[in-house]
Image (cartoon, rainbow, N blue to C red):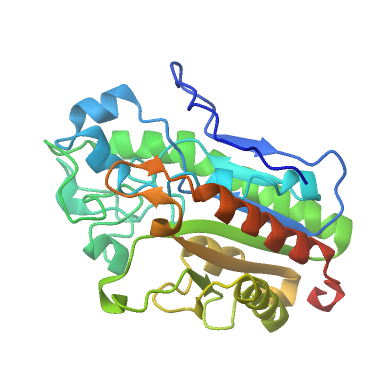
Length: 294
């Protein structure tokens, strides 16, 4: 497969895009599904106006350009689903109603999950803080605002993902979801940070062969790979990964310093090399015999 020699300029997003983009292969040849839930780059103007942070600070929670890193998937026979909205606006790797009551100007419905560890950390479905710990909003929100985001963004993304998984399982008898993310250097791992972290919920969300093959492919390309430390998989991995039902989910975290300037949220020239290596990994996964996933 030929790779571009340089990155095209980023296209301006003048109008609000649909909540997700789904790129399908011309010919479906593999039970793999790729998803990028946190690489969305459309920040609604009213959200930016309500935030106390500047646009770059808001974007530091973004899994920048991950959809591009895995962009070869459709050419290699697998669909790629990517959210267009950012995680700081609405996080699809959370339960739909994980909300911090301290963020809102009135009581929340009794059925809302207000006590999860993610909510306690300020990182619920609607985030209270960005990755650096800074508070997002100038003022408290109305519950109706959160409800609107969940219904207009979270639910369509998950409806599309669930439909992709179901059609894949119907076509092949099983499905392997690769949930694609990026990670900053973790403070506990300064000095020997991994290049990739593979999360399979400690062996419960996918067949061991899937995790092992992804690990072998990446290690064979010269990368340092860890499993489940410090990221074992979020809501998507744990919710959809049901091996007994023929659905397997593996979270892949890519180290941001490998390919981007984290301070400026800009691609680095070496992103092309990483993109080429991830294309090789996808090729290896796509060529594998996955009949063991039944």
